[in-house]
Image (cartoon, rainbow, N blue to C red; front, side, top):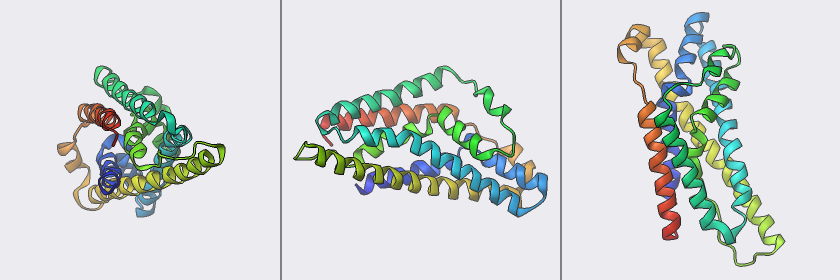
Length: 216
């Protein structure tokens, strides 16, 4: 369980460090307005959008996870879905064009759609299914309802912990670029995580299938 929660936090740090999740937009907001508050507001908006995207993916699985009889099938299906998205992103390297049409003031919306388009929430699903309660002795309606409530609460905790780690990681990078290194440093050190991102989805999905089959 400790390892799974560690994976929630580390995936958040990973998402936050990925430029595709928006920290360059926070730097841009601060530089354009010339105010620290503008950058902090942008980081906050990105965090809100990312949190909503995580919940949009995790909450449906929290409902399905109450069906204890199908726990292995659900976990295998979730892992296969994550693998499929990773393979798709490997084959299709183009960034979603609709993201560039979103007005810069709508950063929360941009963050939500960017996380959905990149499959960021899906990366959490196998980890979340390992954390939430799936085993229940009584398969009656009361037990299923209680389990569903427990798993919905777990979904919120996982999404919050992940988003906090993502916000801190992305925020630290944005503040460092904005306050100390400047755009010139960014132009010389830009890194693209597209392939690594897609491969990490495949890896997480494969691990989810493996542990589901092993009964862990």
